[in-house]
Structure formats: C-alpha cells, structure tokens
Image (cartoon, rainbow, N blue to C red):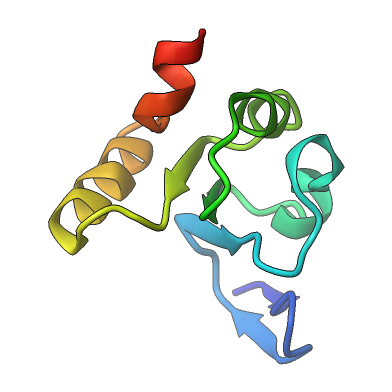
Length: 101
C-alpha cells in the first residue's frame, strides 16, 4: 500500500489510483503542469479537467505528460466515456483541439 498527499488538501491518499483528474481552475495550466510531481511515482494517468480548451494549452499539457484533456462542458455520460478511454490506454482530446490541429 502506498501513501501520497492529495494535491489540494494535504490529506494522504492511501493506495494507488488509476486516474488523477486535475481540475485546472485556479491552478497552473498547459506545460506548467508538473505531471511527475502530481503522480508522485504512481502508475495512474493524469487527465486535465478544464473550461479552457485552447489548442495551445491542450498541446502543452499533453507534451508535459497528461494522458488526456477533458472539457468541463461534457455531459456526464461523455465524461465517463472519456475516462474509460484513458483507462484503456487512449488519449481523450476536446473537439476544438482536434479541429485546430
């Protein structure tokens, strides 16, 4: 069993996690997201959860090691599908980022 600190509360997270959903509100974004520190050596995958889906931020987040970028505008059903895609090894990107690239 491993113990890591929850990013905002400082409370320990006991056990490993499959996905870390990083809410970018009021936090660093894009290439400034320190994926290695947030994952603290865990085997899970980090996904950005944000209102801001500017293609440059999405691209920088992926380059920093994020496994996906999920917009907060998604319905619950699509959000679940996006997380399942990431859990199965895929990468979820918002439509705006795909159409811009």
